[in-house]
Length: 284
Image (cartoon, rainbow, N blue to C red; front, side, top):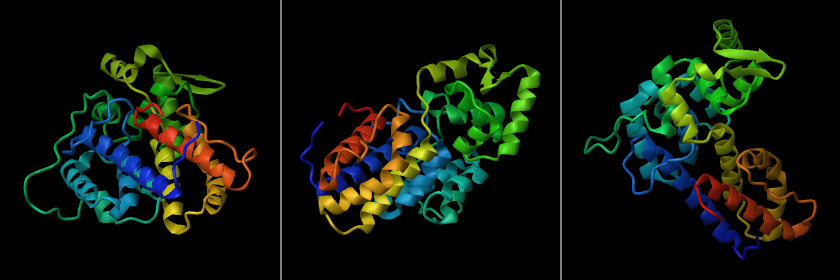
C-alpha cells in the first residue's frame, strides 16, 4: 500500500492515533470521553498507566483524567507491576502512578470500572483472585496456548519465581497441565463468565506494544528533520523493536533490505499506520 503522507503529517498522525488508543482504553475503564470505548482488546491497566505517564504533556486533559481515575480506583492497580513496566519508559512522576497527587475538586469525570465488561477481563480476574500475580497469569494462559514461568513472567513484567510457584500449585490442583512446551489451562477450570469474556475479546501484550510505540514517538520528537532520508535511517534503527509487537496482531513492518535510502520511508510508515489501525479496529 503506497502512501503520499509527508513526514510532517506522519508525526501528527502517529500522535493522533496514539492518543486515540489511550482515550479508548481509559473510556472503557470509566473516564468520561468523547470517543468510542475500547470493545475488542483486553485492557492492561498497568501498561496503560505507564504509557499515559510517558505521553505526559501530549494531552494534559488525558493526564488529568487518568490521575483522577487513579485516585478513585487505586485498589485495582498493581504497584509492583506498574513499577516494573514503568522502567521501560522514561522516568515519570511516581505520585501519579500511586494516585497520591491531589486532584482539583469539581464535577467528577471518572467513575468506578464495570469489571464485567469483556475488555476489563484483567480486573474481573483480579476481583476473582485478588490483587495477586495469579490473576495476570490466569489471564495470560486464557489467551496463550501455553507458557513456562520464564516466558510468562517476561511478558507480564512480574517475578518469575512467583509465577513458577503459582503454576506448580495449579498443576497440583489440576487447574493447569504441565507439558514439554510449558503449562496450559485445563478447560474445565475456566469459570463460565471468564470464558465468555475471553471469547468476545483478544489479548495483546500491551506492555510491549506501548513501549515500542513510545520509543518511536520519542525518537521522532528528538529529530528535528523532516528529510525522508534522515527519518528512514532512524526507522531502520527502531524497526527490530517494533516488528514483534506488530506481528503479534498480524501486521508486519517492512524490512529495510529491499528499500535503500529514503525509499524506506513509505513502507515503514504504511506498516506503522496499519498496525495502529489494527489496534484501533480500522481497515487501512
